Image (cartoon, rainbow, N blue to C red):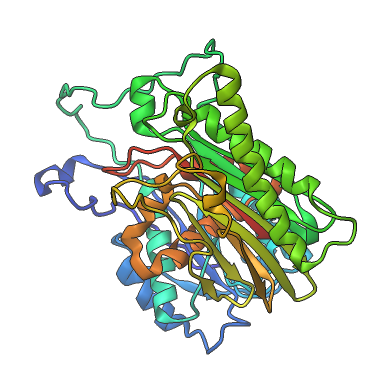
Length: 457
């Protein structure tokens, strides 16, 4: 059996005044940290791990660390408990069976893992733990260093703090505050109505999966207006095809423009694929997507006798061609937003296309409708990677702007969050996980958010 830890009365979280501490109580938690250190790059000293976690869990408690053996059923506690698993190697089927039998409302499980652990096992653990009172997908430890352990400790500490039941002996005073932000539905009877949120997932070419979601921003929700972002994707026998658009907030039919652009672009790129494609076909197909999107907007404006600027939208289009141990990526972008990638060996690549700003106003972006089609003729780029892509992300400015605060660490922060909050779940849960991921609340963030991911299974 692992060492049992009775937390008893836990310190009140920071910010609560000391004179209230004697009025609080916390539930008793039995906490275990079970470590499989078989494939840690250096010897993982339990005493060092104990010290790191004890200093950073933010709770007053003694913490005991125990190394895992092959027989997990002999280690998992029988009494109500919270267990943290630190996995560095693939768990045995027998061990996974023991965990499935063990997890229950009284037995809570959270996992931490290294990149070498089989993702199928991680997804199984995520499915087992998704319904817990504090739901957290398995946490990826990106660095086998003290820093990696510190971040894992902070993650575990946050879970324990959320599990604590802090209940005042007397009800606190009630304060009335004005509501700042409303969440009003958009008009479903509008002739160009679109859902306020949407998500989709599908299997792609070459063992990849495509997943996308869009979330209506605060400003549109407050006014009961439509989300102006759109995305679409498709897959052929050889290619993964993606498109993302952000309709202009000042354009009355921006939502129609963005949806027309991504739909027609993906249709055209898919139709442009020959039976036996070559590298030059990517560039031609990307250009076909831009042309089809622009033509659709122009034709719709002419047919309805409206200004083309009423359909103003940005557009990102991309084709990914996976090949054995390498890949080709064709891309074009008009307007703002971001496209970034990570290879299987952990190398990050800067934006694969440059976001635009209006030369007459640096605070504004360009749109597909900002000029004639020939203006975008030279936007197409084809990249040849000498290794496979692990994750590729396309996003509108609503998300890209929020990531700017991470500076040079933006790539690692985004991909770590995506792994730990979206890709750790089984495929049929990822739509909901990505939609939930985009539904964050951040001071000063008001715009619609869209994120499309191409991930290697």
